[in-house]
Length: 408
Image (cartoon, rainbow, N blue to C red):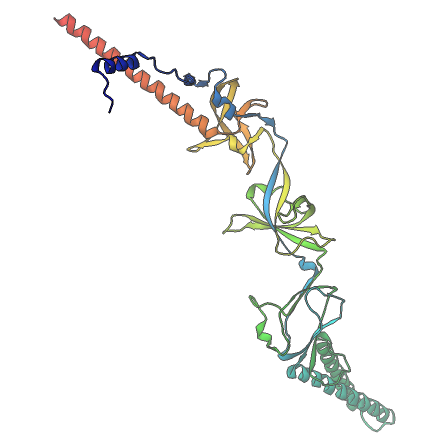
């Protein structure tokens, strides 16, 4: 082991202590000066980095503002038919399926129905009774002309023939209404017939299924739903403020999220006269053409309309804050100088609002990071109040010291 003399070790430590410390690679950047509150105006120093986070937009004169409302597509009820069983029976044949186009009068399904057989039998009996009444009337008329019977007997035969003819017409109309012919045999086969030309959009029966007339009603699906999908209804939930705009005949634009880039034109057909107590909206019914059948029933969509803004200016919705019950914006009066401004709104939308009072066209309002600027403004206010309180305390201490010196 090598031993160093004590004097050599001491010299080495002294040289190390005298060696200068390495210089720092770079001086730490100085913190930017804080903004200063002068009266109601918050002033940022020129080039302050926070200014880049406070974009502004000019308040534009109000003309019209786009309004977006939730909407839902449903079948056009003016071109839709829902079929329910009129008689009890069993499904023996299904002649149409979902997506199949059908003509008016086409047989969609056939049921074996004893109840409908009774209606057919009533029609057959009415036909027999009518023929018998006509023969009896002809014979009575011949006897009356020969002077064998009195006029009373002839009139009674005429009344009986008229009653039998009325019963026949009623029975035939009943069987014809449900798909049976006037001279059809009693086969107990009930046909479900299409009353309109369209497309089968819903089918809710299976072969061999037993059906009952009481199965129809609210909450029970129909056996078939026929509709013309080339035009659809649009159910729009409008706010009270849009009630005056969405009147029958008004146009709107329909946008469907599942069909990006495509827009469809619609027209208002009817508007409700009452407000839905659950949603606080007014139900609007519109019509939209669908020749390409891209739109489907029960799709969710957005209806867009242009609403007249009236007097005032238009600013982005995120440029407005709410303080209690008062709305306010931050106005840039000079580059880097901001002041709060209380405003009165005339209309509020999801993306834009109309300011009726408090702003002039062309004034610059902060459109983003408004909460950051508001927090900085309140911090500056607190600093000013703290400085004022500290100054008042120092003045009071000085006055107390002066009074004590005078008393001595």
